[in-house]
Amino acid sequence: MEPQSTANPTFEIHDTGDTGGEALIAGFSEFGLAGLTAVDYLVQQLGLEPVGHVTAPDLPTITPFDEGAPRHPVRLFSADSVPVVVLVSELFVPATGARSFSDALLSWTADADISETVVLSGVQMPHAEEDHRTFYVATDDYRRARLEDADVPPMATGFTDGVKASVLARGIDSPLRACVYATPAHAQPQAPDAEAALRLVETVDDVYDLGVDTGPMESFASDIQRHYQDLAERIEQAREEQQPEDRMYM
Image 1 (cartoon, one colour):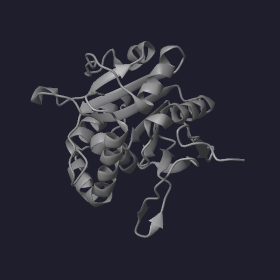
Image 2: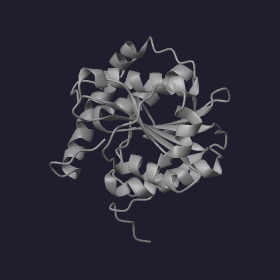
Image 3: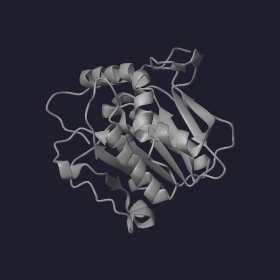
């Protein structure tokens, strides 16, 4: 069989069958790496264990490693006592693969009886100092279930793309409760935007009552600086190559 074109890549999800939770919280390799840093921090602070991974046979991939040990670039984590499953994606998912990735992911969440899908995202946007907070874009049923008493304002206007857009679009006309938590992020060539990641962690901790200790975030971001430095440069290069000029995204 001929391999499928990378313009329409396929994704396969492999799990141990031990996943469980009310919501999937995902962070991806994208601008500022705030969402990715936030979910990585959640895994560390909540003591989550690996329960699965995602493969993309048709995409050029990366294989991250630490202390000489390789790992899958897209991984799933959970724990019996924690009400969320966390997805950590160090693999850049191009816009051409967003639909097939979200289709595979949401098919898996349906099978796993996970009713909510949340994406954490740092976004490039003009903003003032008072905008350094987390905003939401969410389906009506998610807002009713999670945000009526939360101190999180809606994102005023705009549009999104990629995996975030695909997840939100699926949630509009289906039982899926979907939300993107977004915060302004800054591109830093030497490190991810730790302040933006902290805002995302605090928001998720508040909404889902996870009991996360946010105190070590600054030192955590410093620890992973070396690992994410090259990744940030790769993601920014790929982002510039794939997006046309004069377009604004959240």
